[in-house]
Image 1: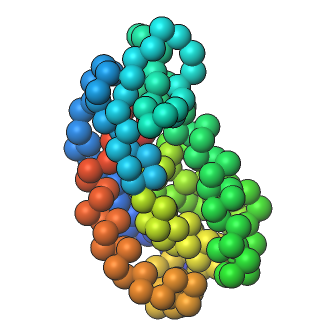
Image 2 (image 1 turned 90 degrees about the vertical axis):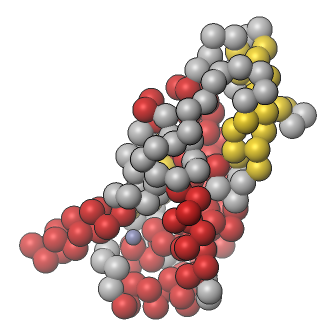
Image 3 (image 1 turned 60 degrees about the horizontal axis):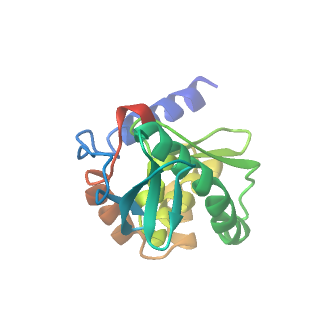
Length: 183
Ligand SMILES: [Zn+2]
């Protein structure tokens, strides 16, 4: 029990710095760019309504700010990720009981021993192949909470060549938008 707790803690410390700590500042004006699934979309300020991505523009109501965009990433991210994760769950035989999108500080993801996977909403800014790596990583943790050799064997088996994604994820972390309201 103590051993298990220690490895979970170790994992938390190890992943604390995965997401950059000095994200670029954003302005909530027409023309500002926001990433979604690896592509940049310009903001268009409209009179009213919920945030939505339409005709290549991200619409934000006048007076809107970070919290509205964070809410949008969470709203679109959850169904997208729940669908995206399914083939990986099957391939890895993972016992995932649910997936939620939420702020997780500076971590991409976390999971609990009852099979619940949590993914940081900021992950939705990444290209889909890197999001896959985050998903595979968390699903592998459902079998192994630590980052030992067996853990990496599980990741490698599911996603051969994962090292490349892991490296790219490290460098992309600093480029992502992570406002205070979404940490
Ligand atoms: Zn991990």
